[in-house]
Image (cartoon, helix red, strand yellow):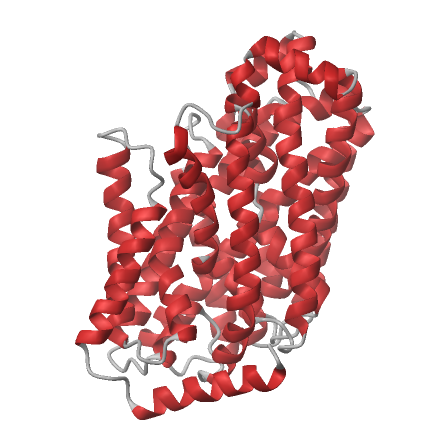
Length: 501
């Protein structure tokens, strides 16, 4: 299809705004600390929306509605699991991590935090955690590239190979230029746009269907099973969907937002804002996918055929069918916002790992701040090109790529983060064992149990359990942590208790 002038105008205005914010952030970026973590200066509103927008990538408006459209209400367990996991992450991880990273030599990255938390002079934790970040974020970034390509392919009629580059170009530019501040400021704008789209679209789909009663009849006409909470996968599928919530504890791009909060008092208010935003967005995404079944059952045609071929296009098709081109342009810009917000912070975390944990950690320990910032920008470009190469397959599915990377981080880092913040007896070898066992279990379960044996159990479940056991066993078999490490842990807990957190 050929994009209309209103679509082109709204997309162009949105992209220019994002790039403009990137150049404004350039002027506030004075050091590598600014480029990677914004100088720990984020207030509660920006912290909340930045954490939410960086979490809810293109899968929120493409993958999740597509899963609901294809399988029905049983996929909504993913949204429930994510809500529970996000609340626990805000409640039990955000504050302690903010305090601990500042006390751990002002750690700027997750590998940096692990290194100082366990006084790892061998730097094995730094190397291995940086490699885990690069491995799974390459896949995660590829999911964002695919989502952007799907959008440009559907809206502008571009071939997939060209859509890959157009979808990634603006995100790469403002991340390259503005760093963490650009990513956080644009996340705030993008998060606002996303919630607007996900509240508006379901209301108009419901009106287009003639109300809930008529929508229910249309869905039952397609397949009555689409309205059942337990689908064909049974209880295992429900457990797997709920287990998405476990992934939150190990996502470096979300944890970085907690680390960047201006102080501990910011966290509770940010939690309330962030959770309200997230619940509204997830309800909207679930409604779009479910109501879309009824809409296209009652409105067959080219759009319905497009969605039937690829369910992840359901939001795009509904926006084009129900709204005038100007409003549709704003709604479709929300998809681009979701994609760009997550892809940008993922590129930045990869750049952080390569620059802070490998380049400065091993090659140039005395590099100047200017050198580090420019090397970080070069790494943003390098990782983006790798992600585009991974995403080159036109049959790639957004939700499939996200689920694999989400499980990898959740199992490799999630238990390590939780135990490191709460258990004084945890050791360096326990952390290393947890990362290794978690990452290997996810990869092995995916390759063997899921793809060869047909298991329906999401790989994060065995990965998280195995990593937790490895941490406990390896730590108990190891010598107790050094006295300074235990003293730091006690000081962090004392500060948290004194603040009433």
